[in-house]
Length: 122
Image (tube, rainbow, N blue to C red; front, side):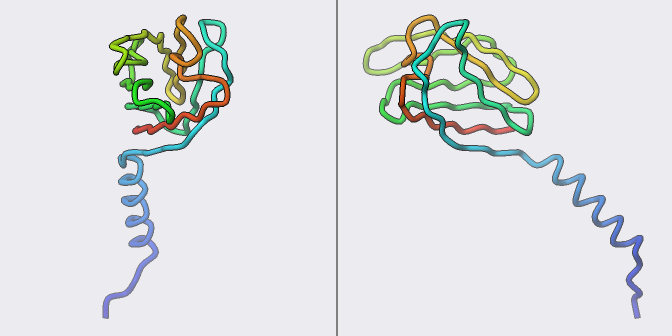
């Protein structure tokens, strides 16, 4: 006896769209290093949402990784068995992250031909 009205569908779809906008976005993947480093050769990841947390790890090392939160401008790229810390300079936009170190391509997470894994939460 309850008639289905188009306005009911439209209202329900509006509520679903609003809820989806608020849901966290997750992205993971890999990239291959090019062997370059330094301020003139930053690494860059681009997303279709605003990143809040980014984790990048060197698949061949238990040491080299970058974990950073939106807004931070510096981060560590190696803390591990060598007890070494290399500082990365970080630049954010609403849809990307750039970083570089002046230490080496490996510590910039950009070693030539190496595979790097990333996890982004937005």
